[in-house]
Image (cartoon, rainbow, N blue to C red; front, side, top):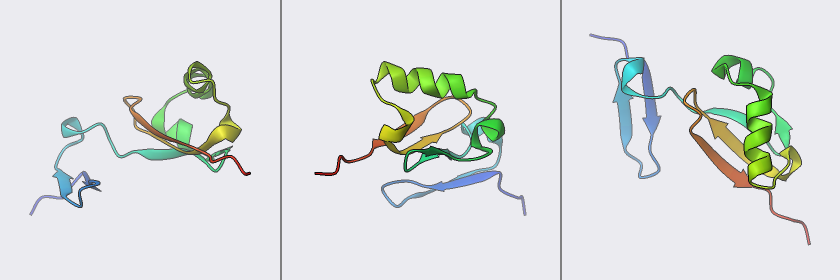
Length: 86
């Protein structure tokens, strides 16, 4: 029996399984949660804080505007903005 390198549950509920890291871009890691950087995430991904800040700046967002940012080592990301309180 071979050990699995990665797995992920897709939004459709389907389970994707990968034997080798080459088959996928690595698991997404939470980089910003509720407007705060998650300690150690960028170091794990080997991505600079400046890259994240520049990406947010292009979208006219600051860190405090982000509810959730997940990122993988290939810089593919999911970004959810915080909702403004009324």
